[in-house]
Length: 220
Length: 262
Image 1: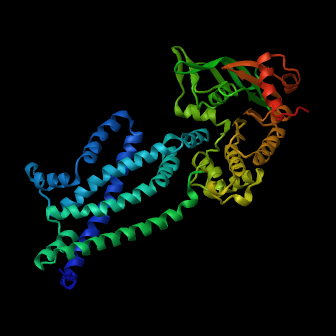
Image 2: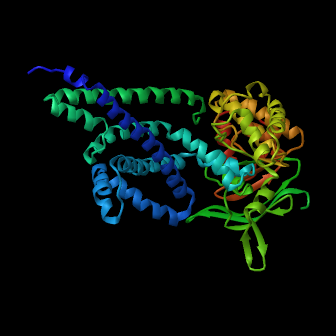
């Protein structure tokens, strides 16, 4: 048995189109997940016990069920309640909501890790509650959550591969389809693995730059 | 009585079943340095934190420059102050913590200027000018643009003192300000505190630095098991401790050679 990568690379433009969809869903989905997760975590931290409990339930459901099941429910189950989405929109929405649940937990843990003494110091110089949240707790939380947040960026990229199962024309669907047509299935999977890994390393490199930039802001 | 910067009457505090402060009565005289000493768990830090309303006393009253702190007496018993009332009383107080508690995302200058900008609503330029003057007072103007992680412990604590002084409080509270520092770095912090004392600042200092209490303190309070056992001048407290518990406590320092009186 011999590998023949040429048949895969011959479909370069198709692969690039799939890569484009993957990157689009990854970048936009992650951005939406971060924003939504931040709002949920902030509401849970400062919104009182009722809000905290009310938001805890959906977060636990989303973290407690497989992403694949969630996107199946959204894409195939959605029409039963009048929610008809095209695959890309469904994939983007699914990834954002799933990611938001995880980001909300990362940010919530970050808020809880802000030393109480830093808040007391703000109280003592007369900051109002809102000022303390805005100028002390929020920025310190952001510093604390950078490493786990970057890790989640990478996890979300890899999870976009599952969107091929709801017919999103992203990279996994495109490349494995080429592999089947050309009888080069293993080759296609190898190419896929390498491209995902390359993207992950790129994201990690950007993350390292960001971490270096904030290193002098670390909590002492 | 009217000369008291802080007036503490019948203050008690408990955490669950543990009684931390038992019926404390204390008048902190204006313009003097009052040191709170005592073994770990004696309640000295809790008492100090009550003076900034970082802990709520379960009973009793605390007056700051004659104004109630935390609670106001009404016809139906005491009620908690509103956030605005509390901020107004607290504005007379500057607090310095054992762990410095500088904000890591702001430079030294930013830490000092923050309250001037956000609370006093000063312009950035005016706030930073005034903050720089405060940093000069603690001898740290050259480090103004460093972040806390780039400063030594002693420098961080001096920034924290400058931050507490920014809003011109009339009373400064220090909670074991040198306990988290290397012995080599305690001197620079104690010197800044000594200068403040010489300028006539009212200071309450929880400390294990018996030498500082003896040389800078105007009066010394000894707490043990939540009780204020002894309150007198340092001469009386250190030279001729008549209370057996106090004597025992001071002996531990004598054993370590850590205290020199006069």
